[in-house]
Structures are given as structure tokens and as C-alpha cells.
Length: 117
Image (cartoon, rainbow, N blue to C red):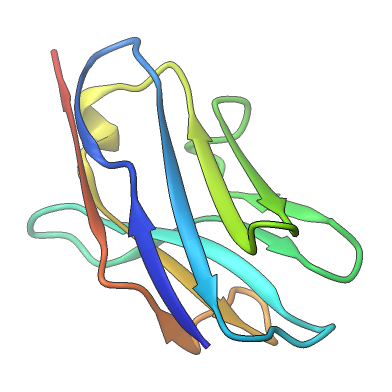
């Protein structure tokens, strides 16, 4: 399984972006898709995850109510809809996957999100 993110960019505070994670290959029933982010000088942190088997979603407190993770099974793509963005959301966002929570077995290459004030 390989992951490829897209959709990052520059947005003003209060704006929205949608990140995409194209999954190449077949995922297993216990697969969990996730998103992490890493800001300059900081450790990579968990953002959101979704269990493929149940559709259960998980969010970091810092993004709860603003970000939504979803999956299009036909496109084999996982999305991260990000609303009400703030400069603190500026980071490289990584798509991830695995069979345990939070998923950290496989990673995409990352996509930069920059929020200007």
C-alpha cells in the first residue's frame, strides 16, 4: 500500500482546505487511515483517524469541530476537510495508515499547509 497526499497550499486565516490521500493498493478490513502534521521545530502530532471497518472517527482536541476525515471507497481516497483554519494549523500534513490506533505504519510524502494571518 502506498499513500500520496495532495491539496495543500496557502490560505488565509478563517479559510478552508481539503487534503486528499490517494491509497494505491488493497487495504485490509482492519485498516485505519489517519492524518498527522508537523510544524517547524515541533514533533509530528496526530490530527485525525478513521477506522475502515466501522467508520469511527478520532480527532485531536485542537481540531475537533473544525476538521473532518472521510473516505471515498470508490476512489480509494481519504480526505481531510479543514475549516476555520488558523496560523497554528500551519504544518506539513502527512497521510498515514495501519492496523492499530493511531495509524503509523505507512506514510505519505506530506503536503504543506500554510495559514496566513
